[in-house]
Image (cartoon, rainbow, N blue to C red; front, side, top):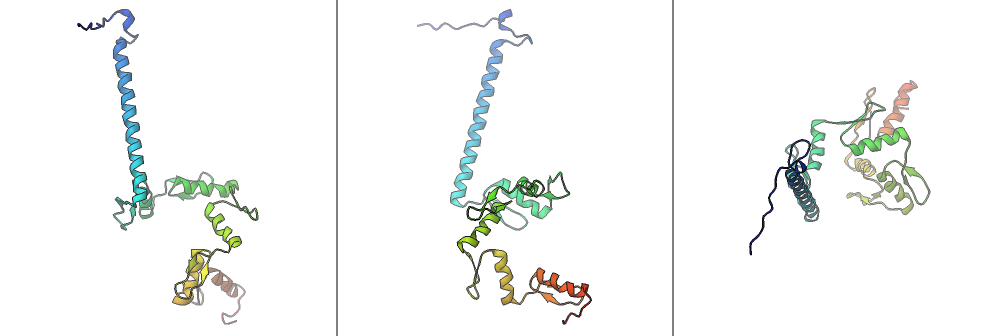
Length: 203
């Protein structure tokens, strides 16, 4: 059985205005489609690999400065800004700059007044979800942060850190006028009123 092969002749009907044969343009379009499919398949493979790493706790990307490890290279790149001081995202309404676009978006709510997170119990609104989660513990009574020394529990990690100073004796807030030390900044601020009112530090 003989196979008839179709011959292409460069007639006026098979040539575009630019002088390129129609069959050549069709071939180029086919190649572009194949490349697009290969690229899409590559993205899917990379996404699948990243998802698998999240389950396996794989951390192949390591910071050369502090040794911290990350699942994804983009997270490492963001982390590196803590060492370099790079803050590529600027607020158009003030002079503040930020390391990530997400931090800038949260900051913009200060200017817009937007508070998208609402407490279902009392209706109070918050700019960030973490603040809502902390607030919710007032209603639930949850205190997930425990002191290893005395067993007391606290709603937030910063409050636990302040409490730990009662055990360590740490007083990181000194008065620059009289040298008196304080565990918390609000205590220092209250103390400075003594100097403002020209009273004795011992009073």
